[in-house]
Image (cartoon, rainbow, N blue to C red):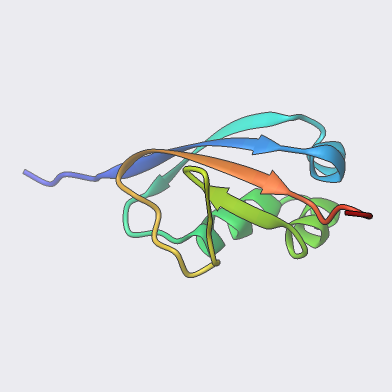
Length: 88
């Protein structure tokens, strides 16, 4: 029997990222073994504007800053997409 483990990412977009995404939330299911970068690629695959915004955003994986090579956990993950903010 083959098991296809996945990660369900609850993605929250903030400020300009929400504007580019056209929503403040989405849910994406990705195969296990994927990275934050894989998720970003998938999110921006059909929307060049969103892809550009994502390229300059900070991502939090379960509340912690995550590099694009960070592994997504199997199961459920919360991902926050934070665009750069002006000021302090």
